[in-house]
Image (cartoon, rainbow, N blue to C red):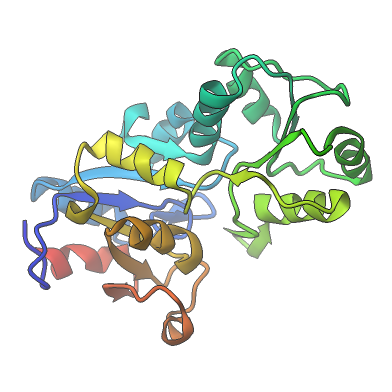
Length: 264
């Protein structure tokens, strides 16, 4: 398939919260747009920076909304982080500030989680229980030789009332407490996340389009690797911000519902 700019696109990477749905409800026209893209021959993979669900849980959520989806179609920050840990720190005790579901997901893959201050890896993520005690734990645990990781950089996440603090807010609190930036922040726009979605699509970057509501994560990931990019106005970013942004989208859309008409 060739888009309006003459680029031979074959794969679409879709952000979830703020792009396909918001506060758990599908954005009008989004489900139909995904169906049209697939009917036209595009491969679709979903990529979320929200680290609280597994691929299977995301697949169930999307299926309930009417989107045909299996676990292999979803690459969340939880998976990108888990794969990074298993590749680089498989035998190292890990302290996690994160949701219970993320802890269970890590442990299911064999990662050893510990509350001890001598953990050699410290992972910061979204956790509604985050408090002063967790900042004290970070101060006790993170030294010069400790690997400090974040699951994703999203400072806020859309919800039914507007926005709520995300992983990025907690990572920043930990970094401020210990006086040190993370060694790696996984999820979008990291190279690890980009490579994961490209592996799922089995396509080169120049044949893929990233669609999302954030310039600094969704679109930055695509632009860094040479993918086409599309910004939707249904989430975090106001399209008016585009004129001052370092990433210039190839498409600016009111919503995902417009995308098929722009590509087909």
